[in-house]
Length: 300
Ligand code: BMX
Ligand code: ZN
Image 1 (cartoon, rainbow, N blue to C red):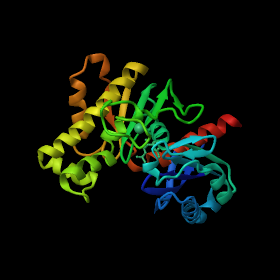
Image 2: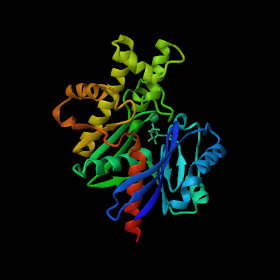
Image 3: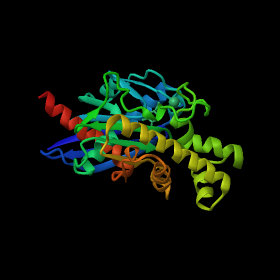
Image 4: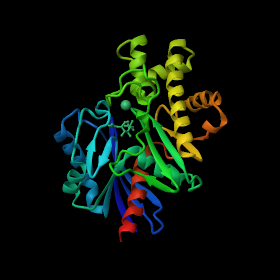
């Protein structure tokens, strides 16, 4: 049995866990610690937080597996949408984690990791699937022909930045009208603040929608419509067996129902089967631990 120190770096929180992996790479989470992502553009603060979080767990681990928001290219973390990561740019994540832990380090994007967790949680039933998280941003991970696609530059699956509306809001990535700029938790909050005041959060807009408010309904409907367009584009490009929806917005009450309604207006070939994520908030940790176990075995 080996022990993986798994780390999940999100826009708002950091999670670290010790995960026991048996000989068949089945994971069992034994400890989990959480911290806030206090990066706010300051790399030193992120390094200090990671050192505090990982320090007590390092001694028990054989290797480290990190899932992080942003593009992971040869160990360097770059935010595609810097608004989601406190403005951090070109952060040497591999080097930082290796220095803190002195262990072998494996890194991938958070949505890629979660896609792998869901592929395994659905018992490898879907050879070709896309996992879409509608959360702070809109992240996607692709499993094609039973393989996780990470891409030569770590970009694969950033389809939250495909076009949803050429006249839509400017996205934090610099492109206008991305799905993320319309559908994400941040986008919902921004649209809600124009109606309900500066302090309104994405979750509050969602509550207003569930209570039947017409303006909140229009905002959430627009989000679901943009995600449906994304799903149709992925399906007609990649011939997918299934789409798995996750994230705080994606798993909120009736959100998948709204996306299904929007897809229902499209021709049949654009409509895959939709399923809710099974791993919830642990998808990044479990997925990256299981992916790293596979990769390290392939290298032996
Ligand atoms: C953004 C991008 C993706 C990420 C997605 C979901 C950054 C910092 N992140 O599109 O890499 O997978 O958000 O991220 O550019 P989450 O933090 O909402 O899970
Ligand atoms: Zn974008």
